Every structure is written in C-alpha cells, then in structure tokens.
Image 1 (spheres, rainbow, N blue to C red):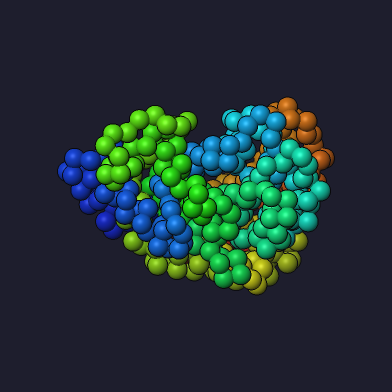
Image 2 (cartoon, rainbow, N blue to C red):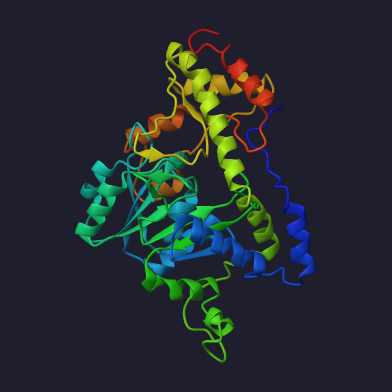
Length: 378
C-alpha cells in the first residue's frame, strides 16, 4: 500500500532526541525549543516566534491575545480545519462564514466587506494548500474597518504572496508541524507575533498566565500569576525532532517541489481529457508545496476515484467537510446551500499521496494507476 502520508525521519532526529534526554531538560522551553524559535524568527524575518504544542493551541492563543469574547464575530472560511473556528468559539465569539474562491480555494476577499458588522472583531484567513490569500485586499479591508487579521498558515510555511512570506501580514499567525506537514515533530505548532505590543502577553499566556519568561531572563526576582493562560509549551524532545527537520529545509522543500511538479506535468493531459482540474497557483504566489490535489467533476466520480486507487493499493483522501454544514455550523444558523462554492469544491477535491520520503518509483506507480482511470464510464 502506498500511503497518503508517511512520517519523515531526518538524519539527526534520533541523535537530537538522545541529546534532549541526556541534557536533563525534556520539558518546555529547553535548548531545542529556543533553537526552533530562533529558526522561525530568522526564516520568516519576524519579531517573535514561539513553539507551541500544536497549531490548535497557537490559534487558541490568538483568540486570547485579541480578547475575543461573547458577542464578537470573526470572519472566516468554512473550508478549513475545525481548530481555526474552535479557537474563538471557545471564547464565546461566533464565526461569520464566507465562501471561497473557485481558483485557489482561499477565502473570497470580494465577499469579506459585506460580512462586516458592528460585532466583527477579526478576519481569520487560511492559506489553503500553501497558496497565499489575496492579502493586499484583505489587509486594506482590515485597516479601513479597524479589524485584526490572523493568518492560519498551517499549510503555508515558507510560501510567499507577492514576494512576502506568508505568516508575516497579520498581527498574528500560526504554524503547524503536524505529522502531515512539510516539517513535523508529530504534533507541534507555533505562534508568530508580528505586532510588538502583543509579544510580552503572548509569553505570559503561553506560560499559564504567569510572567515566568521575564523571571528566567532576570528581569524580575520572582514570577506570579498575572493573566489568563494555559500550558502551551511542547516537550524539548519534540523540539529536537522539529529542529532536525528544520535543518533539512532545503532538501525537504526541493523534494516536495519535485514531487509537485512531476504530478502536474504527468497528469496535465489526463486531467483535460477527464474534466479534472489541477491546483491553480497565481503568478504572484510562491506556494509551499504542501499538497497536491485534484478537483474531480463531481462527488460520485470523486468517490469512485478514491475507491479505484484503494483497490490498487494507493491511499488518496478527500479533505475538509464544510464547517457551516456540520452540526455546530447549524447551531450558529447556517445550512447547506449557504456557501455554494465551498460545498461544491469540498465534494470534488481529492488529495494524492505526498510525503518527503516518497520515492520516484512510488510516485510513478501512483501516476500510472491514475492514468488508467476514466472519469466517464467504468
């Protein structure tokens, strides 16, 4: 079976795990955590990056930093993972779902302004598949309406929009280092703080609401409880795993680009013949090479395609089920039909096997099987 994803093992991964254990500091904010924070700050050119237990917790931190509360509304796409929404729903705020563009599958910036009202406090954007949202228009809207922008950049680490790195536009951004991402430690994430006024409070929230970070820097002689917060620090063992992946950044990104380009080149003619769409990348975007997906003609063909591959020992998967059609989406007053583009493309999308250690032979096997599938007829 060729899996959808296979965890990557970096050359120094086990060595760093051993070093973390032998160094007698395996809890949060150890030497490897600090090196990962520094790597992120240097790679993105940002003021502050803090490793978290996962992207979900990083998103929860953004809601706390923005002081979102009951009665507030947040504009967000429905085509995303539930963590994007739960972050502020936990604080009592409500999602204001907006449809997606039919080309990049990102939030449709042309629909954002109409969704703004007196309760709107923030816009959460998701750079789907590591392709940048239309950030010029989104930041302009946010500035004119005095709204905060948060980038859920779980897919987009090292991707760019008009030459600028994703995760550096909004006041805050989040990263994911889950097993399925380009860089992984199994479960991990990070919060990126681009607004300098939020840096100290981010440290406090991440440290259970205490000013412990200031204490360790020698700025105060003891630390205490000063704000709300939780424990968002990953083990330094996991940070060691992540650092070993960061150090392979050039190899990882070049390998994923090669895989992505090979899929695109070899499936192009087949896609045209079968009314299948390949991913669309605007000329002014540099994607992160996080995934390769196909947009099948309809749901029935999508399901038949997945089953066809499975019967031939290849695992492909669909992606997000629209959140506005879920039980919680209905709780907030939404129903099927409200976001037609989101619903249509969710039914049609399928993700192909795509992982750092995928061999040329494995990918060619996937491609060869796909080329035998006919969208029309059986």
